[in-house]
Image (cartoon, rainbow, N blue to C red; front, side):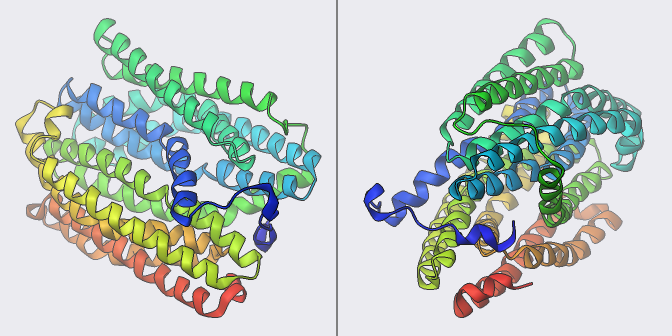
Length: 453
């Protein structure tokens, strides 16, 4: 798609009454937040339910979900690229082309999902060992069991990503939110029945998640068939375009996932209590990240519109306002996270050692939130200016900032979880600084800066 997406004009003035800037930002961010929470809510529910089974099942879940998160992030292009192509083609009057793009997304989601299932079934023991599961046979066995069951739901998860991209591209964010809520409610019910009623342990948690993912996929496909633009059989060019858009998005996402995966791998080598505490804090961090990252959606959309309309001043105003809102939200969330750190871990685990480790991590997690807000908002701003290569470069260079303290923690286990979480703070800070420099160049140079690399 490239810079074509930026050419989409504002709707004619007579078609709608313009809202104040804050209302426009919040109105787009809140439904986007609902669409973002599908998979992380599955993981948060799993952590709360499995945590009460003991530290070994919780440790196995930590390893498995770390690997599954990377898989989900890597496939996120099915959603992100579909949003752009559907919105662009429909706004250009090419509804048939938009339908072919949706068909391409669904086709690739099934093909990639089935292939991913087969691969995960084969490599699950090696993945668990790579992440530290070999240090405890019981933790590794639980991780492998959870991975292999969860792999069955990969095609359904990928179909849901494609469906979410389809509806969001049509400016429909209410139904994805409704599907997310329904899927998560079903997930909770299934896991309670299977884990505590049927006494299936960690396997019951995995089967509950698979069932909820399948239900979500069914709901998305049913809604897609009734949408104003319906999926139709794609051509080779449609599939090729989606795959081409996937390249820069996937490289950036893999770099992001590598840092988070490394934190779990290091925690696994510190001990089962540290791994359990890290799993709790990381799931809380993920939910806070979604709240902040939802602001990246209006940042992307409205910056694209402003630059496409040749109004870089409006893009700068929008960027400043979203950044202000993001930093304010980050400060509030950070204070809430730090204040709740002594009591929140008890929701996830009755083990005092796990609770202690989680409290340490959550205190630093709270400290991170304003920095995380800056990084996430800048992601959206630079994405809106089509600075894909700049985003990829920033994410790769941020790994350099993450590595020293992470390596020190691995070499000296006395540093503990604090070392991992301060390494994450360095990682987020580097991202914010690098993306901030790119955004300042865009703000000074205007629409021409959208080609920055």
